[in-house]
Image (cartoon, rainbow, N blue to C red; front, side):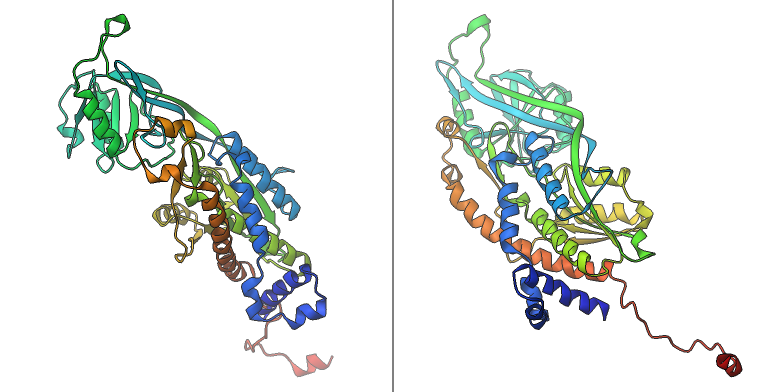
Amino acid sequence: MRIVILALVTGCLLNIHSGCSSAEALEHAAPASLETMWDREQLESHLRILNSTEVEGRGTGTHGYARATEYVAAQMAAYQLQPAIGSEHRLTYAASLNYIQAAQLALVGRDTLRLGPGIDFLADARSDSGMVRVRRMRRLQGIMPEDLPGQLAADEAVLISAGQQSDALLLRLREAGVRLVFIEGELAPEQAQRRIPGIVIVRVTPATVEYIEAELERPTFRRLAGGAEWHLIARVISRYQPAAGVINVLGFLGGKHPVLSEELIIVCADLDAMGWVSGVRTVDFEHFGTDVAAMLEVARMQAEASRVLGVPDRTVLFAAWAGGRLGHAGFRSYLNRPVWPLEATRAVIYLGLDPEDEAILREQLVRYGIILHAVPMPSTLVDPGIRLIPSPTQKRMAISRHSDAEVNVEADMSEAFERASLLAGKMVEEVRDLLVQLTVAGSSINPVFDDGTSVSKAGVGE
């Protein structure tokens, strides 16, 4: 009975918030009204801020990500969620991070032709810093690390396919003396927790490979300064931070039950996105902030309900994690240094969790007896992936003619905000139903059945 009342009154709270009287709210407090209890305008406002130029893509370890945590922390404070420690909603952990700052790829001869980053090539997140000059490029197709020859020429680059590449193969190529590796395929931006020292790694499109091979087969170019000859230059600037500060944002909604309030339910999502890569702007639709917006809306609704009702019974922790693209570094850091005993944590509701990561995190949580409830993006809404947005200068450099280089970013973003706010609303509904099940113990008035104990009738009269 108490669970039904909670759902109905929570729906009333939204109607009261919209300006109707309490009588009107009670009159319209039907289960159907629960479908629209989330605030779409509020959800879209979160999404616009989380994808604004001020947060610079929300890449982990960047100033833009730090500004995004400031916004989420401010929202938690406005909802009167209790800070994680003292007066601070934001907690900093350490995680390793290799971050690509800039990259260049150029063909040098009678003239110098620079290729366009984000269109023709993109530095791989595992690349070391350095500049490499080569005269030839060798294709390695279908080769395994153990099949490589002992040494490869120092003045040639190696080309492998995206499906063929692996850390093991890259390490073996480095041992064989290779200093520059091209990975042919789609330009897929990634983040990495560590670099592979001594080797420059660059992703290139098939069109770029065809163009480079044609250029390298031309007659030898004129001799350059210093007596050296080279045809191709690759330069990458990366920064490896073994203990980069990653920021989690945490806020508690205290439980009201005298015993169950000692138990915790975590509602969480990954806050970070791809950010800028090699000086190229990205729009990370895979981490658009939809799940974070949904988490904040659930927090707002639950905080309002808590001020009116004696719920939740169990304490709820709302969390925005760093490092979602770095093996969930922020979440794993929390498990190593929790702010609430893990043995008293009953469940984790993880919004937007990638199905490929679900089994790994579930295995980690089962060690502590914690149940994982994954809330994926609704399958009815298509994810458009990660969009690279090169600058006009980078487009002019490009030798490829890729259609994505001419997209209307503003039109795409406008459509994405509308789609993502609806998607977030669906997630809010699913999380709300889970929270009712996990945080409300049931009716506070339970019938008492005969337990077989006999009581003296004489004693009752006295």
